[in-house]
Each structure stands twice: as C-alpha cells, then as structure tokens.
Image 1: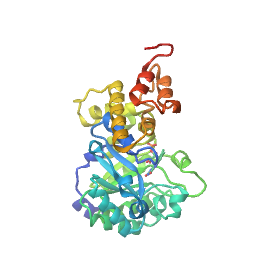
Image 2: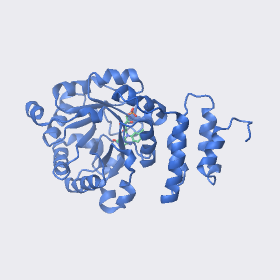
Image 3: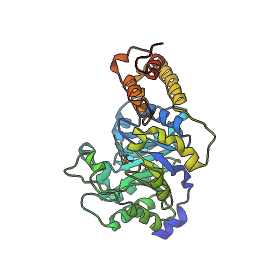
Image 4: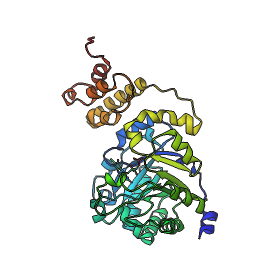
Length: 336
Ligand SMILES: Cc1cc2nc3c(=O)[nH]c(=O)nc-3n(C[C@H](O)[C@H](O)[C@H](O)COP(=O)(O)O)c2cc1C
C-alpha cells in the first residue's frame, strides 16, 4: 500500500509549510484578511462550513472572500459523498485553493451530524467522500484529523486511516496530535486534555514519505515550529496565531525566505481601518465584527491594554473606525 502511494502521490508540499487552523467563529473572512497582512505565504483555513449550509443555505454568505486572502483553504464538514462533491465543486468555483475535510471535530452537534472526529471510525466512508471530491475538483482535497479517538492509542489505527484515505486520492493530511474523546469532554477540553503525541505524526511521515503531513496542536514557539519542520512537512497553528497574531509577521522571513515586506503594527492597523471602511461601504459590515480579530495585535507592548479596550468598547460603535484608531492610540490623559 505504501509503495503505491509513494509512486502516485507527488505534490509540492511547501504550500502547507505554515498554516493557520480552521477555527469556528474566529477564522472568518475578516480574520483571514488581517492574517494575510501579517504573512503573504501562510496558508489560511476557513471556519468549517457544513455541506448542509451549502446545499440549503446562502452560498455567498458562506463562501465570499477577498482575492487578497489567497492561498486559502475551505474546510468542509459532512459525511455524504454527494453533498461533499457538490460543496467541493462550489468551493473550487468560488476560488478556494484547497478543499479540506474535517475529521477532527469532537463536538456533540457535529457527532449528531455523523461527521468530524467520529469519521475516523469509518475510514472507508472517508475514502468514499474524498474520492467523490477528487473526482470533481482539480484543487487538492485534504483531510484534517486526530491521532485517535476515545481510548484508542494504537498507532495502527491512525496509520490505517491515513493509508485508506490516501488510496482514495488525498495526498495531504493535517494531524492534530491528540486523541478526540467523544464522550465527556467539551470541544474546548478536547483541545487541552488528551495528551499531545507529536511522535505519532512524525511516524506517519516516515511511513508515508510521499504524502504531505502537517502537524497541529499546542504549537506556540519558533523553536517547536523549527523542530517539527525537521520531522514533517508543515505546521498548523491555531490559538497562538489568533491570540498573538504579531508572531505571524516573522513567518515569511523565517519559513519562506521572503524578507521583502517590512511590517509595522501601526501600518497593519491602518490597513485594517481602510478595510473596515470598505466593508462598511460595500457590504454594510460593522467595524467591530472585524476589529475583534485584531485585539491581540499589540500584545506585549506598553499601552496594549488600553488599545485593546478602545477597539473592543461597544460604546464606540457609532464612531467611524479611523476615530476609534485615533482614540486607541491616544495615551490616557492626552487630548488632541
Ligand atoms: C475557537 C476554535 C474553533 C475551532 N473550530 C474548528 C473547526 O471549525 N474545524 C477544525 O477542524 N478545527 C477547529 N478547531 C481546532 C483547531 O483547528 C486546532 O486543531 C486546535 O485549536 C489545536 O491547535 P492549536 O493548539 O494550535 O490551537 C477550533 C479551535 C478553536 C480554538
């Protein structure tokens, strides 16, 4: 099995070197616009979009994004091959660079829909889903999953899952390096309690050298990123990128040898204000539904707390964003 995968699954894995994880309510299009200002090359994932939302809902609301966001991957939640094929095709038509299937989410709501992490118990169904999508799109179809579910600790389980799904045409696996415990833990606890086992992900890369394998879970420092990039093809960062976004401003230089863009936090904030004004004009978007994603931008700097408070102060809602920025930059006690 491995040999066949070695021969057939070749692609440029650099696209997955660094990525920001799919995060519901967090990595919406506004967040991705912001993250793209911080790194030109990092791959950005959408929040999970269910096939139900695309089959029955407002497609434009779920799929609209800005050209500046590329490269951007659409994450789908679903387990019905026909609906996934339909949704993947829509994703490609709307311009996404990758279609990713969620096989890692442990929430009860998702389990009731019989997708997310519980799909790891059904490798052949996942293979059917992947095949249905691969047959109708030309962008990569990828899978994000865990290393196991519940108390299954054996490496063979995740190895066989990856082997079966790879045979259906998935060449890229993003592996959250902890089990999902489907009973008794909230999704939040499921991102913290089951232990991290990065060695399992490294073993997958050794066993499937031709596949692109990216590791995810608990990664917060360049030291760990560099260590992991020596073992696997990519690193996906979730919460740390969201809470401390300025970290991403060093990634183009460190991980893509691209020092061409000089960035400052002030310039990024100014670009975000222009974006807020444009979004308000063209789509009626409130600035605070955009600003909420950049509240960590000045973390670690003097005055960060006040800056954050002003940008998240709901009493400011009626002010235009450039006025909010002006006030956020004013030191307490200072007037214009
Ligand atoms: C608020 C939030 C929402 C999330 N939503 C999704 C999701 O929609 N799809 C998914 O595959 N993972 C989701 N995750 C999990 C992340 O993608 C990631 O696997 C997890 O946070 C571990 O990475 P980290 O330790 O770098 O944050 C979510 C995580 C958070 C914090």
